Amino acid sequence: MIPTILKIKKTLEENNINYFLSGGSSLFLRKIIKNTKDIDFSIKEEDLKKAKEAFKEEKLLTSNKKAITFYKDGFEIELLLTSEKTDKLSNDILEKKLFDKIKIKNEEINLISLKNLLSIYRFVYLRDGKEKHFERIKLIEKLLK
Image 1 (cartoon, rainbow, N blue to C red):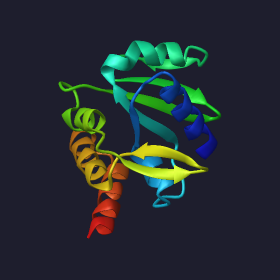
Image 2 (tube, one colour):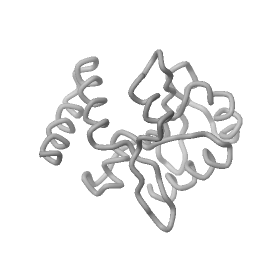
Image 3 (cartoon, rainbow, N blue to C red):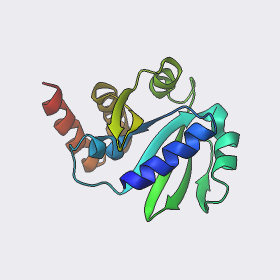
């Protein structure tokens, strides 16, 4: 998973697309969970065209106002689109560069903070009611105590 994250990160940076890693992949890189099925990067909605161009060689599964989704190296990659209107928290994180950084293989990767990830998981759990999100809420709350 790490080589795939580094490839996506490199492509985003080469195309001047600000990002941060969120969801289970941010927990995985912190060694909080052992695996995750997908890799979630948050980017600004205004970077949609640049992202589509940057990843034009990938077979897109979906591309809409919420996300660009494709497979790379056996992982589902989601480029989650944020804006002031659709996701103020993620938008603020990107605009103000409020993300954490972690160093992997001499590369710095932007990660959502655990506090902000907790807020997002709470919102998503209330919206979708998935048990997986509730379990991650409990896990992060325990870590933040």
